[in-house]
Image 1 (cartoon, rainbow, N blue to C red):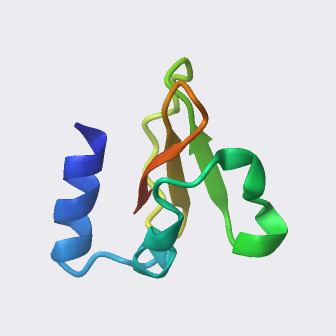
Image 2: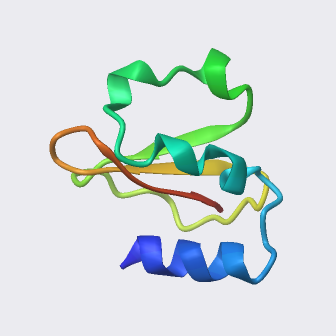
Length: 76
């Protein structure tokens, strides 16, 4: 459900973190991602994690599934 909110957020023009430019990573395996590659503030959200509810429009959130595959990328 988070990915739906992310898509709606991006569609409304809220892309301060550059998530729209990173959508090509959706479907990739997470170990291939590095902070150096992304070059920005990143939060990785795994199925077992409970991220804080703070919102930072400049932070890139990368949501993973149980197999460590990227399922959503959004600001927040």
